Image (cartoon, rainbow, N blue to C red; front, side):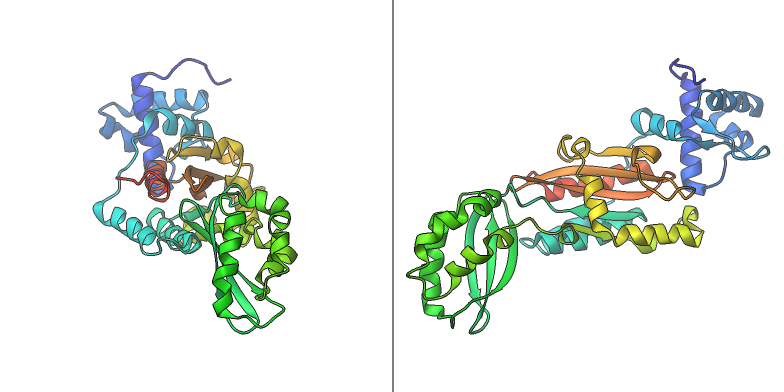
Amino acid sequence: MPRPDPLSAREEDVLRRVVQHFIDTAAPVGSKALAEAVELSSASVRTTMRDLEEAGYLGHPHTSAGRVPTERGYRMYVDDLMDVTGLSPREAGLLRESVRRRLGDLEAVARDTSRVLGRLSRLLGVVLTPSLSTGVLERIEVVPLGTARVLFVLAIEGGLARTVTAEVDVEVRPDAVDAVVQRLNERLAGHTLDEIRKTGAERVQDLADDDQTGIVRVVLRNGKSLFRESAPARRAAIGGAQHLVTQPEFSQPEWVQDVVELVESEDVVVHLLEKPRLLDGDPDRALVLIGREVERGRPGGPAYSVVTAPYRLAGGVGAVAVLGPTRMDYARAVGLVEYVAGLLGETPAD
C-alpha cells in the first residue's frame, strides 16, 4: 500500500531527477546514474528509489533494470516538483507570428498554430476554436458570387467569423443587396447565434415580400443551418502527428495507427477537450491529465497525457492542448500551452 506520508526533501530530489532523466532518455534510471548528481552514495540512492517504488511513485519494469516513473510519480512531479520551462525569443516569435499573420480568420490561425505547437513540442498540437452558439452576431455581410450564389459572412463580436455559401432563387442584383443586408442586421445583430436559430425566422418574416434579392428567403429557408454551430472538423485543428510517431512509445505499427485514428477523429478531440473540468478552469492556465485520467488510448498501447489550457474569446471558450505519451516534457508542454492560450485569448500574452 502506498504510504500517505509526504516525501522528504531527498525523496523529492530523487523523484524529480528520475522523471527528468526518463523524459530525456526514455530509458529506466539506475542508482549509479543518479548518485553523482545528488552527491549521495549509490546505496543511499538505491534505498531512496526503493522507498519511492514502495510508495507507488516509481516502477520497476524488469528485475535488472532501473526505475521509471509511474502515473502517480508523474502527478507528484507535475503538481509539486517541476519548474515550467519558458520559451526562447525565437519560439515565442514563431507562435506570435502564426496568430497575427491570419488575424481575423480564427480557423486559419488554429491550423497554423497547431502545426507550430506540434513542431515545438514534438507532440500532437491541438487548437480548438470556441463554440459559436453563444457568440453574439455583430453583423452580416453578403457578397454576390454570381447570378445565383452569395457568400454570407457572419461576424461575431470578439473577432470570430463564419462563412457560408448559399443558392438564391432569383438573379442577384448587387445594387439591392446592401439595403436588404442592412435590414437583416437591424433585426438580427446583437443576438446570439443560438437565439437567431430559434427566433430568426419570426424576426425577418415580414421582410420577404419586398426582397428582390432572394437573400431573406435564404435566411428563412436555411436559417438553422446558416447559423448553426461549426462542425467538429472545422473546430479542431490538429498538427504534429509526424513528430509524435517518432517517440519510442509509438514504435509498434498498431500504436501508430492509434495516432492516425485520433488525428482523423476531430469529434473525439473536441469531446475530450470540452469536458467541463477542462474548460471551466482559469483562462490561460494549463491543466494536466495523465494516463488513465485521459480515458483514451488503445488497450495495451501507450498511455496518453494531455496538457490543455482554455482561452476565452467572443463570449465562447476554446482550448489549446498538446497530446503525447506519459513520458512527455510536462514543464515545456505547460509553458507552450499557456503561452498560446494567452495569445489566442482576449488578454494577450506578454
